[in-house]
Image (cartoon, rainbow, N blue to C red; front, side):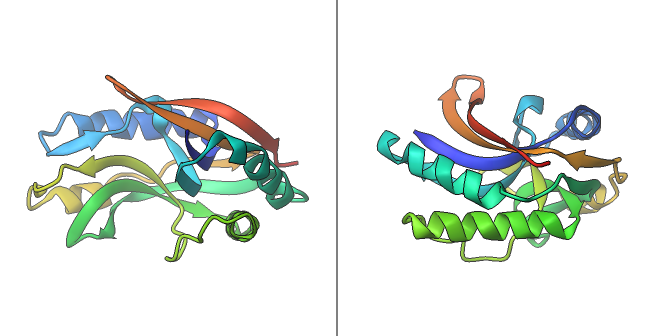
Length: 183
């Protein structure tokens, strides 16, 4: 099974991010766009995991989320990773309170203790909007258009979720495997 841990977007933030995504989808860029129901803030990506590891991952999630309160977040403008000069992932920035970084760090540590390697690069909170198709380039003004997207609303994230991702003909479909409230 293919697993990841993420913060789902509450309705107002999901609505704004979806609105911006649909506007970008109208452009004829060589991008595989994310569906609205796939918008989230990834904290830890596992990839393919054997089913017998699920309990250990759920325990790590519970341990990492213990004592963390709801997280203050705000949607920022658009951008590209790893860099605007070499874009592979198009995203919305997320401005976060320190709790999100603490949560992500706890997840990395807890998952490292059960045999999952840390990410190896700094955590940059973002919402993936799409991925540039292999071997293609964006139009010259695409990054400027992304960076010109309006900032969105502030919101509080009150849970963190372990998702299973399955490939379907219409793109990935996500199933909640476990959820932890941030109180």
